[in-house]
Length: 208
Image (tube, rainbow, N blue to C red):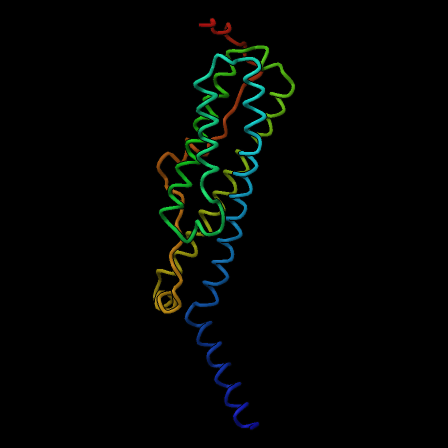
């Protein structure tokens, strides 16, 4: 019995060495980095989504006539909320792309809303608006940092999965490539929206 145990232990040791040598352990560690980075991306996007309703309500109080812009932001947030944002997205390239597009639309709509606010001096001087704008700008910066970390971790993992001989291990264990953010419009999407409160505001738009 002890001899069988010794043989089993030896085989297990050999298997462990083999897996380590063929990149399995490396891919597991890198995949955990990808998952952690993705979790932070989701956390920051959720933080931004939580700020949107209050921002819309504040802007509506001073610029209700900007109906189209307000509706665009509300619809973009609804579009983001309709997607199940969890760890499963990085296992589904099509769903990941849809999520990326929805977040891009949210960023664009939010930027338009903040640009429109420049036309309303009373809105710009409202403390709630100023606080929300600062929080959103800070969140956009954190989103950029989180996305960059995810991009780098996925790039490292995918190179390992594609490289020989670790690609054979990845295929044997069903370890897939992870989807990454596309570079199209990346600069525009990731640029935090800003409002210059020190600049003189133009005259309010005339009510229709």
